[in-house]
Length: 364
Ligand code: IPM
Ligand code: MG
Image (cartoon, rainbow, N blue to C red; front, side):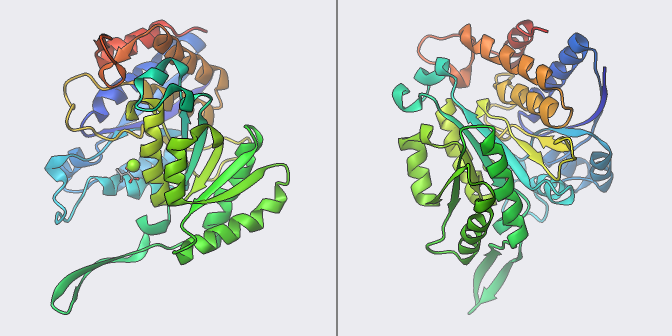
């Protein structure tokens, strides 16, 4: 019997629809296993811009510091996407990642064999795909300074800075090697060392960390080749460590292995305590999907899997996490589909119907 404080930040688009289901999953777990998940909610992203003129309020960041975890929906949408707008919904997300020091973004990509026919790749290519991408999340070109507009020769110019400090690389490398030990023992580091200085540093530091883990295999791949190999031979990857921008791009690509963006969760973690647990932000990688927002047809699976990651990494509730993951697998196994993963004549369930089907399969 344990008690946890969860900050729920639903955001925009389909964010609130899927976050509602994540909260129901927490309640169901709480009921079955006798835990209490206290919740508070707040506005972020476009919703917060509309109400308060900023993408996140300082008191929300403070509330996050006092919580055990954040369940995050999604931010953004056409209403706020004018590139010249001074305030953008994504700033709320980036502020949280940075202020809370959430430098490790874990993005597992697992292909459920039941869905192998629902993807655009050949089923045999997808056999045995089980990848853990660790994306560096608080540095790189997302945060490097300067990042600004300039006037050059009377014309518009812009600069972003791809910056890395060796410590930022080393901690990602250590985490990658450590997690690989509990998996298939292989780390693939992805960079662009043939062109970028920050990537040459990245590769150098990974090589320096590597001898501490002689039992783990390590390879370096350039990001363009990695993009190709992800589609060509995805089952060769185990743990992938990479920079903020490359990780962002490659995980959208990798999501297609799983059949839909709507299937993949992520956990953003900072320094963990001795027991391996710590504060985390849990976020489906699908984003706000404005094209289907408000229709109740979004796939709740990513959010359920986020909730499972929350139970595992921030609450230390491994059995509960596995129960939730098993319920998702059971629902998929029974042929239940939302529109994004339905093919041929398969019936597409609504968000709520799919969530109900998963919760009905929760055992424990
Ligand atoms: C993600 C998203 C974000 C990112 C956006 C919304 C800022 O694409 O979490 O992958 O680029 O990190
Ligand atoms: Mg992204």
